[in-house]
Image 1 (cartoon, rainbow over the protein chains, first blue to last red):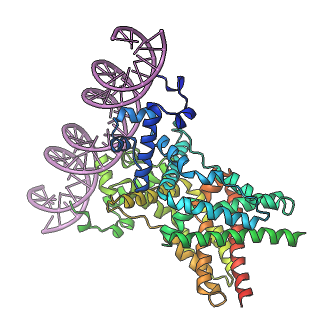
Image 2 (tube, protein in one colour):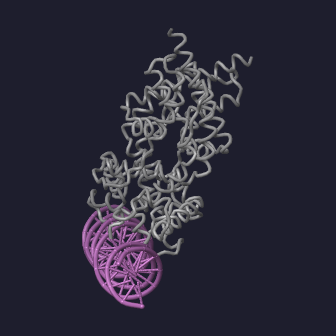
Length: 213
Length: 213
DNA sequence: GTCTTTATGATACGCGCATCTCATAAATTT
DNA sequence: AAATTTATGAGATGCGCGTATCATAAAGAC
């Protein structure tokens, strides 16, 4: 029973037929469960979606694959984000305004994803690397390069890179983990702090370039 | 067999006797395993330490308890950190110089701890809150209040608080996770980026207070 | 309509973690 | 030294995850 023979992974998403239907059902169920705070095992999704465990494992062979798929859905508008604003300050503010509420909305999902990357890192360290779906987590790099793009030429490439790296610290689930869970802030306050910090970093990079010139 | 009847938790640490000895052995074994990248189960520590599983579980009833104990050891010098430097810039640089190498050294341990806090958060959300040891993760707040202490009076309390919160984003395991794992930086580069970001944030807070006045 | 292909469900197995019980060994106390 | 408390080990049990097998039901081809 080789699935890819007749319907490959990408085709499965949007086409119809029994496979696409079941997959959609499972994904929706998994998303709902994760939103409620659970990081469901494949078996749990199977039960909640009222399909047999065997079937569930045919679509998502591991919890990692499951979370990966749900995260892809959750990322949605963040992946499509673009900015034509002329200055970096506006771009970073815009990015945070788009991404952070979405991340907060799917907080449980993104935290589960973060947990999985930590799992995979540990297994890699220990040498026990199953060939899992390999959670991506590289979106930040691309997005932040867009943010710092207006600074090309005005700021040295090294400084630009450093700024992007620093910005990646104030943008992501980790921000919520720290500000909400440790400091007890609301989602709004957390976003405000992140925006302030991001603006300060951009400002500093620009200022340094100015004094260096 | 009520342990606390004769030797309570705190007494166990430094006193001697068979219990303290076994506990120490297990802790050392667990630390060694975690440094090698594994996040060991209680059973694994038991085997590596050559004690029976039953004994192991008497000391550490769960993996969470185990990690918690190892983290306490790993924190070591970070918890003792103090600074008498007169200005916040120096203090934050000093804190990062102390803490980041230590965190990097015990990277696997701190990542495991982060994973556990995510687990606990998820279980809390789902309502299934076992009464686990409840990982602390609040050290950052105290340390950063010390960092921003020189700004009291010079900067409004709100701004001071916000600065501390922003600084907490560039100080901790999360920084390593993002900069090393996503960007592929070395530990040294990661620390340099964190230091630059921290300095920029402090600078921004001070500058804002100046212009506001 | 028959026949093939494909999807699903029921069931069973192995594995590792966590817990419990009970017997033995070690220690402390008197 | 004897008695009592305390620590340990060996084994059994239950539970959940992941996998494999086989039989049935649904969909598509002719």
